[in-house]
Length: 231
Figure 1 (cartoon, rainbow, N blue to C red):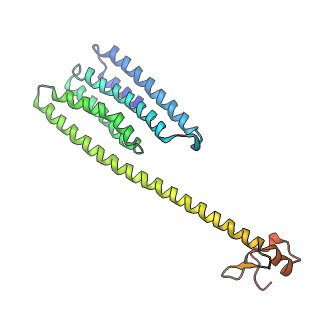
Figure 2: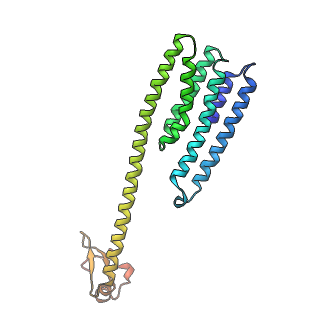
């Protein structure tokens, strides 16, 4: 996403006075994007038991910060060098990147802040130092946008964490159920007398070896489940 948005910005702002600087900036963004892609690939190849969540969150946050620093540099360097239309294009592209980050970094508030704090601050500062009053109004709009972004992220983060928590609880319940079922089967198997359990349709569910020996000596044990009580 960062590479695509930076490519769009390259086209929007390209001009005789900004071309070389824009190209250098674009190459830097591509380098950071490649590094972040390799980091993500390394993370997905890890065994879950080997991953230390906090360490990996810090690595992802550092990658987001690096890209955010490049976007803030683009605002500070290229905003004044552009006409009003290009300035709006820069803000539009940057706004799209920030909105995408709110969803992309839903699992980590730290990574979101690392990625968007510098660009948003750079935009507000740049707009405030412009002489026309309309820019100050835009700075206020960006501030409100930042507040809304934080609220949206909190809702996304809370929803995601609740989903993960529910899945973990369900997995724990399944493990407990499987362990209880295993203990019950062990108890049935080791019971010295014949014992069997039938379902509501009077069909055999499980029986121990003694029951099979006494009541179904001529039937293979593997064929017993599902047989009616009358047989």
